[in-house]
Image 1: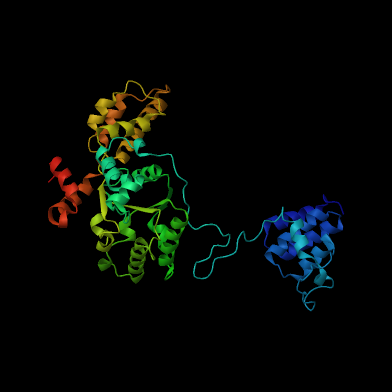
Image 2: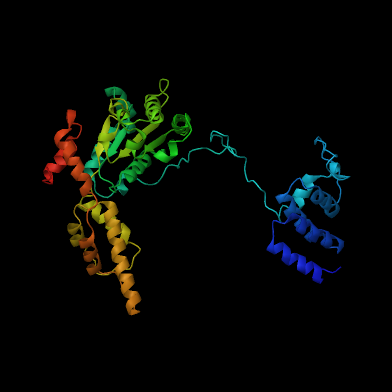
Amino acid sequence: MPETSPLIRSLRAAVEAAPADVPLRLHLAGLLLDAGQQADAVTEVAIALQQAPRDAEARALMVRAVGAAAPVEGSAPVETSTEPEGAGTFNWGAAADQVKDVIPPRFVEEPLATDGSGDPDGSPAWDVDAPGSVRLADVGGMREVKDRLEAAFLAPLRNPELRALYGKSLRGGLLLYGPPGCGKTFVARAVAGELGASFLSVSVNDVLDMWIGNSERNMHELFQTARRQAPCVVFLDELDALGGKRSRTQSAGMRNTVNQLLTELDGIDGGANEGVFVLAATNVPWDVDIALRRPGRFDRTLLVLPPDAPAREAILRYHLRERPIEKVDLGKLVKMTDGLSGADLAHLCETAAETALLDSVRTGVVRMIGMKDLVEAAKQTIPSTEPWFASARNVAMYANDGGMYDDLVAYLKKRRKL
C-alpha cells in the first residue's frame, strides 16, 4: 500500500486532529509498516510510547518496526504475563537511541528532592565572577568615597608589613549606604577590581527559601563558596532585607537567617574568612539589625551620595558616547543636573534620545540629539533621591546615636536640608 494511498492520508489527517489518540496513531503506524515505511512507523510508535509507555500493542509494534535485539546485560527481566511474546528480550535502550532525534527526552534532568534541595548536574550553586577590569579610577568623581575606601579598606590590604606593624586588623566588612541609584554596586565591583579578587553578588532572592532550614544552609554555602574562591569579595545587596532587625520580624526563619549571617561573618573557626572581603549595600541602614553593625562585622560605613560634578560629567559622557549628538555643552548640563542620581542621569539621556527619535519619525528626516533635547529632559527629570533624603533627615536629627550618621548630617547641613 503506497504512502500516498487515500487511507494513509486520511489517517494522517485524523492523527493530526487528535494527537492524543494512541490507538489511532498505532493503526497508522501499522499501515505504514505494512507499506514498507519503517522510519515513519518508528516515529509514530515512539510518539505513542511517549504518551503510553506501558501500552502492550505499542511495544509489540516497536518490536516489529525496529527488530528484536540482544538483551542488555544485567537488565531486569520484563514481566511476560502482560507483554506480547518477544517483548522481554527487546532492547529498549537501542530503540530510544534510534528515535532520539525524532522524540526529545521527556526529562532533561533529575527532579529535585521533595524539600527543594539537590543539584543534579553538580554545578556550583553560586555564580562567582572572575576578577574584573573595573577599578576605582573608572569611578568618575566621588573623591571623598575613594579616599575613605583607601584609608579604611584598601591601604591596609595593599601594605601587609605596615598592617602588621600597626596591628591593623582586616576583620569586619564595609557597609555602603545612601539613596538608590547612586552607584553602590559599581563601587563594590571597583573594590573587587582593586583587590584582584573574584566577585560574588548576592540578593535576598538568592538566599531566602520557603523550606525550613534551607535559607540558613544557603547562607552557609554562600560563604563556603567565597572561602574556596578566595580572594573573593562577597557583596550583599539590600542588606536590610537579608539582615533586618530581628525585633521587628515575626518569622522565625528570618531570625535564623540573620543569626546564620552573624555566624558566617565571625568565621566559624579562627581564620575561616581569610581572603574573604564582605561588602554590603542598603538604602536604609537604620533598618539593619544592630548586631550586624558591631565591631568585627559591618563596623565601617561609607555614605555614597548623588554624583558630584566630575562624576556627573563622566556618567553623561558614558551614556551619550554611542548616541548621535551635536553641540552638547556638558559643562552647562552638569550644572543643571546637580542632585540627580546616576540612574536619573541615565534616564535623562534616554529621554533626550527618545525625543529626537520621535521627531525623526514625524518629519522623515533623521536628526542628531542636541542640547535643546537634553535641557528639556533635564527639566522634566525629578531627582529620585528626594524621598530618601526626606526619610534620612528624620534619622539624622533624632536617631544619630553614637555619631553613626555624622557623614549624613554633615551633607544635609552643607546642602541646607537640615
